[in-house]
Amino acid sequence: MAPGGRAGGTGASGQERGDVTVPLSPLPAPPAPTMLLRESPFPNRALVALDYLARGLLAPSFWATNRLLDLRPTTAERRSRCCGCAGRALAALVYAATLLVSLPLTLLGLLLWLPVQAARRPFAYQYTAGTAPAEPWDLRQRRAFTFLSANVCLLPSGLAKFSNLGQTPQRATYIARQLAPAPPSPAGALVEPRHGHADTYGGTLHTPPGPPASTGPGPGPGPVPVALAEHFPADADFVCLQEVFDAGAAACLRRRLGGTFPHVLSEVGDRGLRCGQLKLLDSGLLLASRYPLLAVQFHGFPNGTREDAMAAKGLLVVQVLLGSARGQRVVGYLGCTHLQAPAGDAAVRDAQLTLALHWLQLFQEAQEQRGDVVAFDVLCGDLNFDNCSRGDELNQRHRLFELYRDPCRRAPGQDEPWAIGTLLNYLKIYEEPVSTPEKLRRTLSEPAGRQRYLAGPILASGQPDPAAPSPWQGRRVDYLLFRPPRGAWPLWTEVAGVTFVTQLATRSDHLPVALRLDVVPATP
Image (cartoon, rainbow, N blue to C red; front, side, top):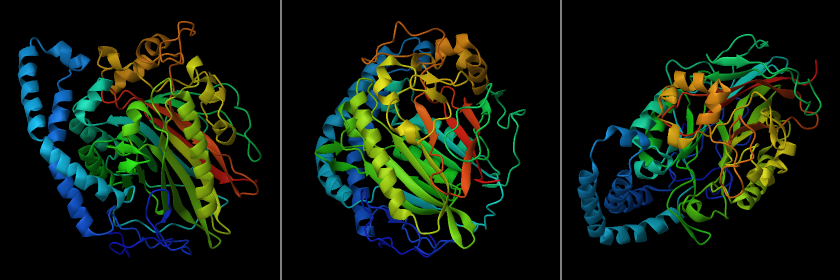
């Protein structure tokens, strides 16, 4: 229970369901909010017990199904096995028999699980005690914040095999350790301006020639320092993960991240029957923050189709308390999402982007208090389209990019020359040149390496585009966007660095992306 919390209660605005905002602190609390949100997504212990019982009844069939799917070998397992066909066939018979025998329990568990999910708030919250109060903010000083977004493909091991991955528990342990090494760096430290001559994250630094186009009033942006790094940034203030679908993986991440990030949201999404669809998986989103959360909101997309219809994908958005200045709150807004995956569903993604923009605006309008100072407005996640494929042209021209700035993008269909794709060729992730973070970084530093190991441009059908220019930069489907300040805001955001991270070599088919923003006075 968070300090000052109450079991089974609701936030200051009442409900804690679906698309209803859940405030985590009383409204008038600039320096140090009192957390009112219970950690459990259920309003009472009886429902918690029923949820455990339902999952226990479903466990045998889930285990058998997962083990059956897990028999599919990855490309690395194919190379290492001499003759495993007979053993796999025998195991498949055992798992299939277990699944058949467990069907009565499965039906009973499903009948119990569905109504319990209807009473569940769409996220679990973990608060780690010891958070320092929000410090006073001198608006004349420069501050820096680092955001990390990564698709970690932590599905149950059997489902992960469809992405040529497996061993989800082992991968989750590794990812958790890399995301939260000890000791943690201080959050939101005051920083001096950096000039692009050193690589903070240990990768290869590139400073693109010439400044990017101006995005509005305020201090003009300069060249963007860009790194291809082997390690996650140690100073990350916010971590946004996608595809944390496996419950054990989510628990592992919560335990480890809690030592560095006092506030963690996981198990995000409305499971059960939603909009006439059966959601067996949550959204897969996980958000960790060094800063207190003032309000949290989740909206589920109503238009998921095909295999994506089984997951409760949507938009998670939070308001964070960064400090106080002149008696007013200094806040930031952060959204995390994962859009429809199949390549041919550009229209579905287009509608989801429109919904996300609408929800972001409503959330900010509802949470903003008079006198609030907004330091940043960031949106990140796996959007499942790139800025190089002809098949993604509809999504590339969405209004999202008129409101939010993508530091890696020059125009629809054209990225900055230093940007690289974040989607790997999943069939080649175990090959020797990309088998370690250091080797993957070195390989992707060369055009030939990007051509071979990054996924290339596609047509609307999802097939490779034979007319794509060569060598390509790769499909950049993972985004970190920010919205330039609007009106007479006293603060301005500048891009201090973009990092593509190779830390998850052989453990994900995506490259994580980090964005460092400097928050500076809007006037000299």
